[in-house]
Image (cartoon, rainbow, N blue to C red; front, side):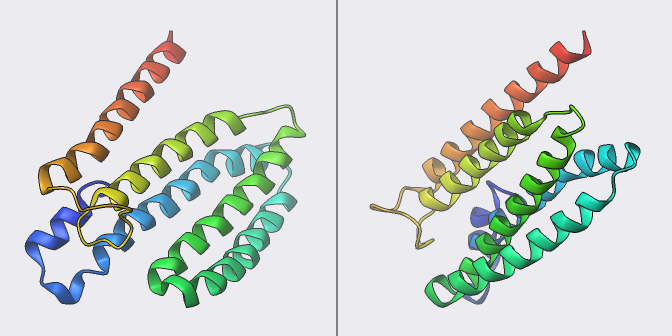
Length: 168
């Protein structure tokens, strides 16, 4: 979804749905940040420390709302979603600080995964013709899809190697 959505929406839908080609990758990033919070929040619950979950939820929504409302006038609906991502990242920071007090530190691992997907989403948006994110001339369709797919493949290989080495 993060890499193919722009091409998918451009090929199968008319211009009325062109906004979705930018929103889909950004929503994937938002979901991914939330997915990295699940194991951390479950660890806190297993440790009997549920109070940081409320703090993280408050940070996520308060900062997300402020960032979204700040970005919306500048970028419209497309700016609203990165604002939610900022809020999700704030909630993640709160959770990671809490679980770190218990001697569990997974910040760098989660940051690596989120940064990797953020790079894939960014390259998807920047390389897409007519996305409004491209800094230069629009690339052709095959190149626009090849750049983020290469990053996605590299991330998949890296992830599989990390999981297989941890399983040994």
